[in-house]
Structure formats: C-alpha cells, structure tokens
Amino acid sequence: MRLILAERVFRDDSAGQVHRALRLLGSTPNAQYMERLADLEPDTKEVQDLKQALETNPRLTSARVRLGLLEEQHGDFTAAELTLLEAARYDRQYLPAWTLANYYFRREDQNAFWRWSRAALPLDSGDPSPLLRLASLAEPDVDAVLTQLRSCDQIAYPFLDLLIGAGRLDDAQRVARVALRSKRIRKNQLVDLSTRQLKAGNVEWALEIFNALRFPLDPERGPVLPRLVFENRDGEGFDMRPISNLGIAADWRGEGVAFSFQGAQPDACSLFEQPVPAPQRALRYRLRYEYKSSATGARWSMAGGKSPILPLQQDWLAREWTITVGPGPVGAGLRMLPLRLLYQREPGTTPARGELDLRNLQLQIL
Image (cartoon, rainbow, N blue to C red):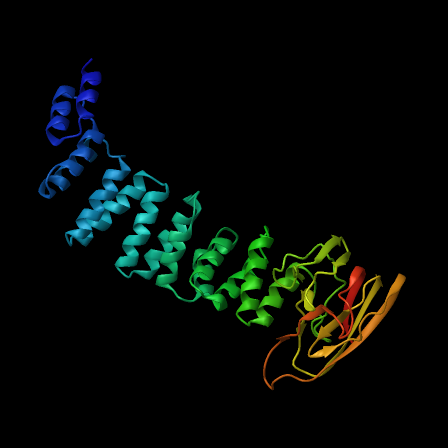
C-alpha cells in the first residue's frame, strides 16, 4: 500500500510531493524519484540529488551521465571523465559510449574520441548521422573518418546522405566508391548521387557511379552507350528522359516506343533525350535503330548536327546515322552530348498525324 500511495503522490510532480513520496517509502527509496528531484529542485541541490540516486541504484545510467555532464559544466573535468567512464563500465550500451565520444570531442582528445566513437557505432540501432556529423567536425577528410570508424558497410550510405545534404559532392563521390564495394548496394541512392553530379557538371563522377551500376566503361575507346532499354526512362543519371508534349502520346514497350501524333502537337519539339557522355577528343558515333512510321517530321539531333527527316515507312526498317563530333576544350574532362529525337513540321505542310515506332536503339563510338 505504501508503494501504491507513494506512486500516486509522486505523480503530482512537485519537489514537495516527491520528497513526501520518498518519506512514504522509508527504507526502500526509489532512485528514479531522487533523479526527478534533480529536475525539480534548485541547481545547488541537483548534484546532491543525482549522487543520492546513484547510491540507491548505481546502474541508473541516465543519472550517472547527467552527473558527469554537470561536473564538466562546473569545470571539474577529472571528476566528469571518471563519472562518465563509470557509466560506461556499468552500462555497455549506446548512451554512455556516445556521451564519452562527445565529451572527448569537446576536450579535443582525438584518440579517445575515435575510440569511443567506434564503441558507440555498433550499439546504435537507429540513425548514425549525429555521430557521423561529429566525426566530420573532428576530421574533415572523409577517408580518414572511414578509416577511423572501421565500419564502412554500416556508415557508407548515411554518410553519403550527410555529405550530399552539406553540398560536399566531391567527398560524397569518395564515399560512394566505398558504398559500391559494400555487400549491400542501395541503387536508388547511388543513382541519385549520379544525377546530382551530372547536374553539377561533374560528368566523369556521374559516369563513374552509373557505370558501376549499369554498364562498364571501355578504357580504350571511351564511354559507350549500350543498347538502350526503353523501360529505363526515369531521367535519373544517364537514363533516357521522356518529354511530354501536347498532342503527342507515347507508348513505351520495353525496348521500343510508339509515338502517336494527333495533329495538335507543337510545330517543333523534342520527344525524348538521352544523355551521352563523350570524351574531349574528336570522334564519330554511329546510331543504329529500327523504325516504321505513318507520320513524317521526326529526325535525330546530336552535337549540333541533325539527321535527315525519317521518311514514311510501312514495315520495320533498320537504319543508321553517323555523327561527327569535333574536339572539346583542351584539358577538360568528359562532356555531355545529348542525343535527341525531334519532331519538326516542315514549312508548307500540315501537322503530322499517325504513328512513329522505334526499337533496338544503339549508339557506338567508331
């Protein structure tokens, strides 16, 4: 009955009522009641209340950690360190290890910081981002952070998110190389980084990731776009980017597509765009494809050149178009030369009506 009454009194949550609850318990004090007093009583009694709570229950981690932080706050660093180490001795879970990593970060003790960071990392079942953020402040070099933490598989993807959020795409690329060697590949996250690198103009970095996920880079002949699979058309990375136009319906069919022209389309528009990574040297490409068409006005465009308009064709016909590309700026890396399928109404003609079917599209460097 004393326990029940004490609990009801404690729930009133005032310093006076907590003291009354402790009196009701008599010789069987409750450590959590004493810890709560540290919140409710003046600052001068906070340390005393926490120490009394720990005398009652030495394994009350929250109270010991709080006591250590108070001792640090009061400038008693020796006592603070011993208290926090004692918390880690009693409790080998995340909170004491994480608190010690923070403590040694503030004390600028690099060796102890990394030791307790490594101890905390496998104990965290949630998001390791706070620890990684602290590690990045302690050591800006991402390779050094990965080396110190020694848990690349666990931290590679959260670290990647952290670096992308900070706009550190060069460091994110280095972590991505580690992620690509891990046992579990998170394809969407890596493709997202590839897309971001591409938008930032880092074509070589974007291709490095995309190649590792989708297709190999030929070191002798430069980047080669493989046979295009039309179902990869989400516009991410180097995937095809469909373009919607009023008056044109598109039906994507695995390795092919059918465009239906309804006569209400713009006089000139792109139907889709395929990003093509290209080296800076002069080179020639060959575009191969099969098509049939009951609508006229479609043509290819790449590197400033345009193919002849595709003539009407009742049955499937294999065609090719050779593209000559001049050299890029001296000393630059890879460049982007988008391949586009265009529709353009010829002067003096009515808007196209009918269908254009494409399949087996392939681009090769000659």
